[in-house]
Image 1 (cartoon, each protein chain N blue to C red):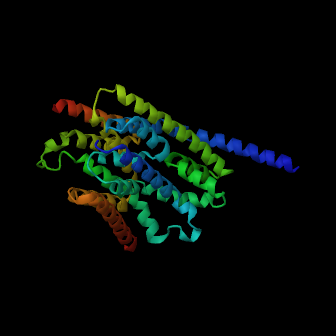
Image 2 (tube, rainbow over the protein chains, first blue to last red):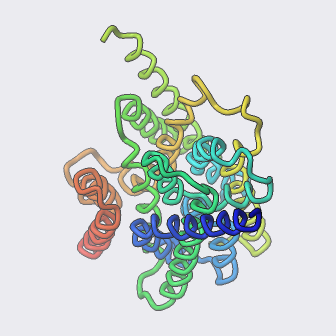
Image 3 (cartoon, rainbow over the protein chains, first blue to last red):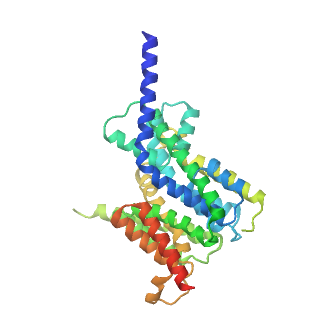
Length: 240
Length: 113
């Protein structure tokens, strides 16, 4: 009896793994294009093959990679670049808070591995599944989505790395990577606090162009968040 | 690029730590430490502010010292970003927006030379 239960649980896990993998299929073209652009951008700013592959497989974050690429060759220090990548990665902090509700009882190693791999598309798939009220074996579901996403990202990034060698254009091609990063910001412009955050962030970023150590960038993040909180508080305080 | 291999591999190590910490922080902290209230609200708007703070100076790199005239919109970097934002807002198709933004960047770049 117990054996059957274990086997059926195993089977459910397999089914959910495949369901997760299928759920992200729709996002794969986008992931592939972003991977391709990141691969090309890394080579066009002058990275060698092994570091570019290292970034693809070990860092596994288009956001961090694209955030530091324009800083290479600009005499920015390691810590400045790391801080910029950390700031650019703030959305993952939000994701980890959302994910923590789902992975609380999962063993630490599996939790950390799953957390590391869970980027935008798999988390969105999990949220959809939850809204549909069909959340069974969620870790298997999530990791099905994660594995397909990671495979697509790494393959397309390698393709971009290879493609960079045959593309005739030079470092200006790396600007595509910056555009890819900018495209992540546009859909977040929803609601008044978000627009306030954007306006303040852009204003401080422009004012702080020439501040040392990219302090303009970090000031812009603080300015944006402060503006959003202020506008959010004001609109809540107003009688509706 | 002027950085040597030690710098680049050091950067890769540090960026890996960034990925690990950002994606796992609240997975290892106890439930009582989960963001709520003002912290949760700040975290909600931080990604947008951060992405703009990083990309806008690069987008405006070549126009920041130019006089404010309509010609500014023909700057390849700025025009590409504006077009991308518009296409993305109205079509909600990121790949299309990136393709058109990229085309504008290279089209205007080639035309300006």
